[in-house]
Image 1 (cartoon, rainbow, N blue to C red):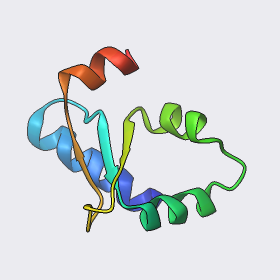
Image 2 (tube, rainbow, N blue to C red):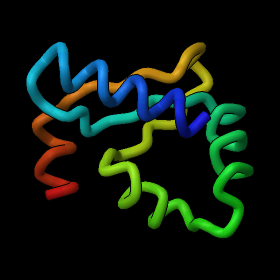
Image 3 (cartoon, rainbow, N blue to C red):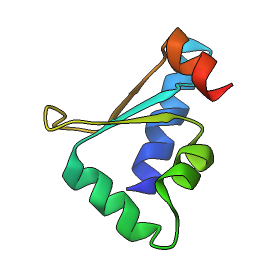
Image 4 (cartoon, rainbow, N blue to C red):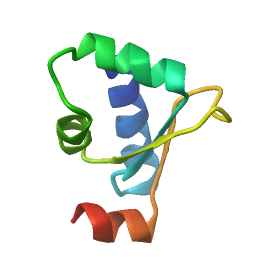
Length: 75
């Protein structure tokens, strides 16, 4: 899961010229990511990824985006 997220991040940055600051995941995808990084707290995961996490049942595939409000929160 982490390598897939990295690929999404890299492709977004290459296409748009800026790094994404939002990561959309389903609860199942979030559990998968947390299983890969067992000892990491959600707050630390957010810092590691450099993106706000949006967890929603509506997400079928992980994706990234950029949002001004998220930039102010992270920065």
